[in-house]
Image (tube, rainbow, N blue to C red; front, top):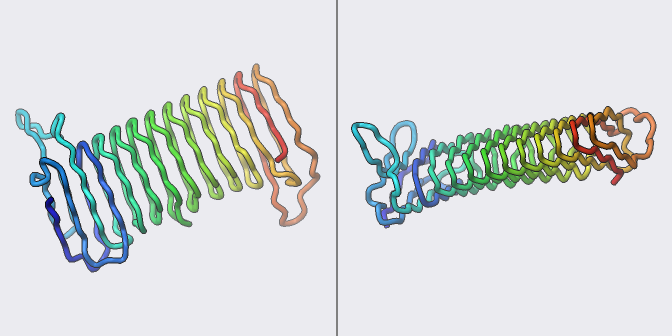
Length: 280
């Protein structure tokens, strides 16, 4: 099993390009970057340190002068430990990616593999074709941009502004306490808690916000159902429209908000989907 060690007293930029297999990156308190690789072609992986950072590049196959990741290449499993606040850039095929620790600004791109990030402490861009994307938590000021074609996107707690989009995949957010924009094509959208300015758009998917407590919430749907739960006692202003669907509401009037009191502005629009507003 090839193992490479580099002296890195400061955060570095790591670039990883792997076709099939897995990549695990741990950003921790260390002054050494360690790269371990397993797989039948592990010795063919290029691992280099330069003035700009460290690169880990899987073997390539040239056809008529054109390079590309090996077609049907064997599985490679890469494990990297590097200093906290380091930056990560990936270009993966079907390899899964798991990131833990305190990572800096990163751009993660995959094909059909999943991307899982425990903590986004810096700006994060993650894109996949059909793979799932998950982010457990982002810190304050860490802007997150997540995009998947047919994969699902799951986010725990957002501390920084977020932009999320999927084609046919579902989106689930635990706590949207910052400015959040979500767009899905045919996927469903579920938000456990919304307490900031948010914009949610779906095509044929259902949209549900289990508890909204403050801020401006704008939802747009086509044929899917929209369900919004409003925290009891919160003053709410509503602007709700549907073309051919039905509107049902059990909200109780809470009057005008007192100075400094949390309040909610809710705009919901659908074409043929129902809109349901409930007090929770």
